[in-house]
Image (tube, rainbow, N blue to C red; front, side, top):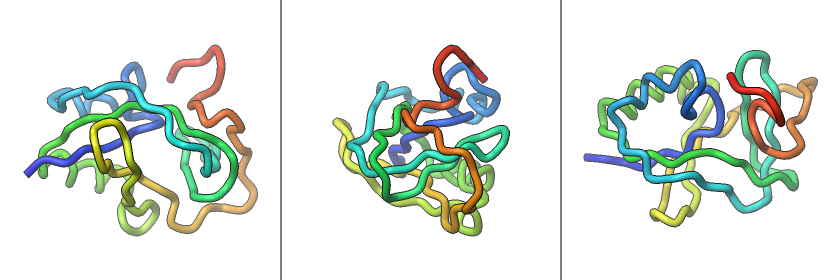
Length: 119
């Protein structure tokens, strides 16, 4: 079994957790349709439904074992839940915040970690 996953934070190339995707197949960059809010949660972002931001990230094809490791990293389903979005490669998982914190800074452009910075 394989699945597609859209990553938008520390799992992207050049960021601290990308090693978890080293064996995954990179399908390409993707920008979601608007309709999300990205929040700065300290060392990583979280995305929730609602809002006007499009989220910029990358799409990978992962094995069932890799998906299980990603679920563990994302503390799914306690902190994040997996939902699907449409991408050029078909239905793809995205991790969304289950209970978004109220007092977190928004990342208005939906690009982590923002202009001019790399993780």
